[in-house]
Image 1: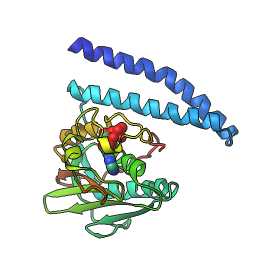
Image 2 (image 1 turned 60 degrees about the vertical axis):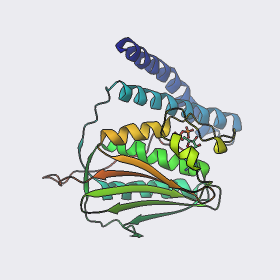
Image 3 (image 1 turned 90 degrees about the vertical axis):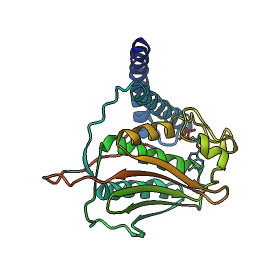
Amino acid sequence: DQQKTAFFQNMSHELRTPLTLILNPLEEESKELPDNKNIEVAAKNSRRLLRLVNQLLDFQKLEAGKQELKLAPVNITRFAYICGDYFASACSSKEVAFSASLNGEMMGQETNPVHILGEVDALEKVTFNFLSNALKYTPKGGQIELGLTTTPDKARFYIRDTGPGISEEGKQKLFQVFSQVDETTTRDYEGTGLGLALVKSLTEEMQGEVGIDSKVGKGSTFWAEFPLCEAPAEAEDLDFQAKDWLL
Ligand code: ADP
């Protein structure tokens, strides 16, 4: 098994290097030639491939118990605010309405800090997987909401969309590896069914839980819920860029 893990990791690294060397020149070219459709398609698909290889690598590490998350208190309200900022622009470029809420009210920049024991990198992967799915399945003119609700001992982060929704049967399999829900696997939606399995593992590594509320035809709400922790002695500087998530 250890041999298998080492093999997967070497393989992923070997895949990533040439892929990056394809992607970088393509992105340069697409800046120079913004109207060239071929370059655009090639760049988009190499990004997709890179994302996939990264997911595989992450997943493999988690399965092997090798992904050691560096858990530390993260201000989840601040985290949600920063995500909201990024989501807003991702949604507007897809003609989907976006809103962000905190305990049911519109989310503003000034919020009381609420901390969970997590890792920003892992939280980022969780939320952006939710977001990229929501964007993928929500038709033009639809709505996506990012929300955070807090209780004295928990914080729940959710992404709600007005997409097709998911059947009871589909929900059972959703967070398993390589599961794609039948009713949505037309070739319009390419995917591997790896994203949500990764989300579940990462969330559980952070002592959290994932779930979904959905009805066919009524959209879906994907959530991750975490126990709260004490605030750190010194206020941390929470900043990240959604650089790997060119959607
Ligand atoms: P992928 O999107 O790569 O196939 P995921 O694990 O992210 O893998 O998602 C698994 C499946 O769950 C998707 O293929 C899709 O069928 C379904 N799904 C995920 N998010 C949504 C959503 N917001 N609305 C409807 N179906 C969804």
